Length: 114
Length: 112
Image 1: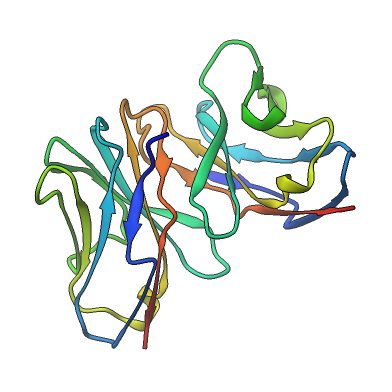
Image 2: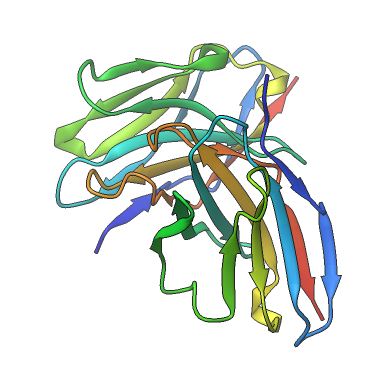
C-alpha cells in the first residue's frame, strides 16, 4: 500500500541548532515530493518540492531537502533554526499519474527553545 | 502576495444539518481541491476540481458531499447532512498548473 511516514511526532531543538525532519515513502514509482509547514492559525505553506533532477532541493526560509531513492526518503534540513521555525511540518507525496492527489504524512511538531 | 482564503474560520452545526464551506482560490488558478484533517489524524484528500467538474475524488467523498464553483471566484464544499464524524479542519487549495498547491487557513467544523 502507498504510504508516507514521518517517524518523529515531536522534535525539540535549540535556537541556532540544526534541524532534520525525516520522511519516508512507499510507492511503486518515485512520486512527486513536497514539504509543507503550518504555523498556528495559518494554512499549509509550501517549503519546497522535488519532481526530478538534482536530488538536493533548496526551498524558502533557508530549508533544503535531499531525495534519496535508495532509502525512499526525502528529509528536510535547516542548518540553524530560528524561533519562528516553530511549527508543524508535513511531508506530502503525489503519484506521478495523479499529481493533484496529495498524500500527507502525520506531521512533525517542531518546538524551538531559547 | 495572493492567498487562498476560507470562510468561516470556525463553524458549529447540529448533526443532520447542511453546511457550506467557502473558499476563494487565487485568482488565476485553474485547479481546486478540498482536504480535511480530523483531529489527531493525517490531512486527507477529498476532491479535485478542474474545468467545472470533478477530476478525482476519494472514497471519503460520498454522496453527502458536493463541490461547486458558483460564480467564477468562489469554490464551495457542501455537506448535505452532517454526521459527528465530519468534525474536522477542512482545507481548500488551488493551483495554477496542478504541480503546486496553495492552501488556505482552513475551516474548523464541529458537528454536535
